[in-house]
Image (cartoon, rainbow, N blue to C red; front, side, top):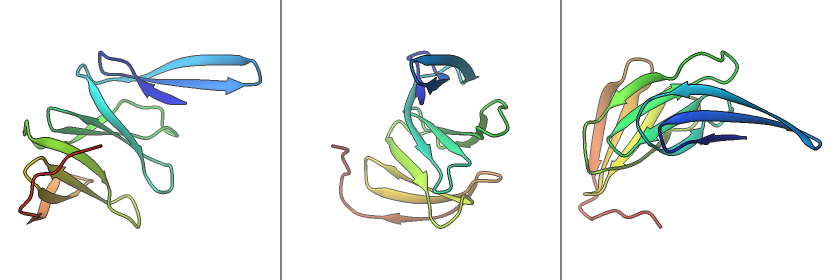
Length: 120
């Protein structure tokens, strides 16, 4: 079980029967708004409401790596663009959908939906 604490800490709970073990995986020092696993569960995206996207690879147990700094207070959400783990799609409140290459954070393109977007 992965979850984030208010302070931007990614925590993993390994639960077996009635026993559990807690491990702090990463500290990005800002509140995490969403956690999203890649389709093959090898990567975890950590999203902040300040427009930063980090990647954490559970099998490597390393630190979270900043992939994107969208720098937008209008940033709403992001997710992996399937199939695979190479691309990310993000959306702003204003309805701008953006595609990014995750290896180096290269911006690849955008589409404006011409409507305000909300999460429910």
